[in-house]
Image (cartoon, rainbow, N blue to C red; front, side, top):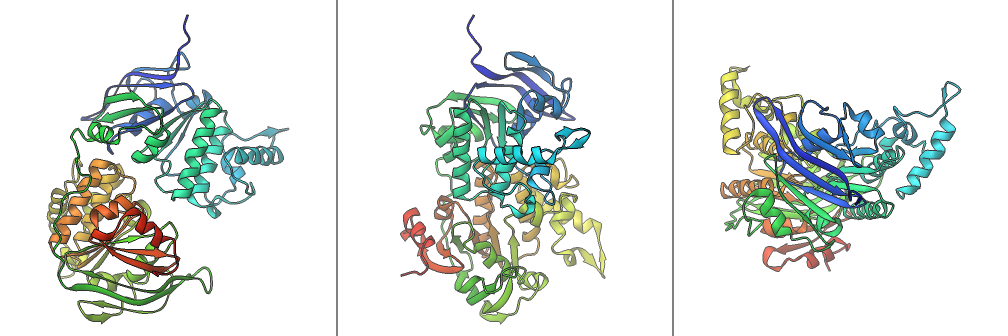
Length: 512
């Protein structure tokens, strides 16, 4: 009898929530010792499928069969799936920042000796697990002192400590820089060599192309495509067509720019790191943005792009050490976020969940939150104005939700980003700073965000676009500034910019 080549077979999985068929007859076959990519737009059903697999949605709450290592499984909770060797690394890391690496790794799985926790053994085993994932750090170190890339590796080390056989990684590189992303992909290759199977949920088609042995595409709760691939030979256009149900010939909408007068002019801007005395985050930075223009900022992680943006937006990052800001030719002193908003500047932050949204609020309350004066009459908030305003922006931005009263925490990443955009559009800004506006959202949702950016530019807004994806900057920006170690090192028009010229200016200390 031939041995089953699949470690996992999810057969005809259907999951229904009140009024919503989240999964409809979904099938997933994953070969042992492979790296299997799952693609799909936000809200397609990928996370729901993984929650069915892991027991978050227990047996009996869905239809269909899960066959794991040749046996049908009926997991009642996460503990049962973990005991079977299945572990999930979520996009939002789940560790407790104040506790040490050892305490996080063995939480709920403590090593007990004579009725007490055996910390010596736990620390030794933690060091062994950290070594497996390529980390040489003290196991007593609190999680809060680690970078996001290191925290991601600790999460994987935690999974390995439980003798994992099937590791699921949900958008594992969405918050990582290029170096940390490459390290993580290499680790997945090493785990594959040790016969650990990986499922990777990702929107980054270049990473899928580089590492995957097979790809499954889910759209609107259905399996729409599955094919075996040879690493490095993935048809990215085919994946996009499957994901969105249509062909996106050009990933960036065609747009004709008509820049007007200079709206924002920043000169010799200097900001010091509030945590490290003498370290300059921004060094004599000078740039301008015109009405109706999209200006990109390119730089490697840590180059100072976000620091520059946040310090301009009401000096809410670092210590101001000099420089001037002019809006429509007049010098302004933006000493607080409130003054920045009143002078027509809006900032969509890189970290939408922690800095852009209150996840306990509804869509309605979030959209109006940055401009409450607009819904006041004689100093009192008017609920009817709030509803009218929120509905207007929700409809114009095509936010997918049952109503404007649902919580923003229930929305997909792309729709959450639209809510953040709506919140700042409601302030009627002249200058809109967009910091990584498409991070962690899928191809189809990205295209909608791009169209919104063009719409705002056509309305005469001055747009600053910060992005780690050079193709995005080349596809969207009219001009691109490059930043390296807090200094602006170059300025290129769209026609003269390419990835090589940008990367050259992103890795040098001057524009010469």
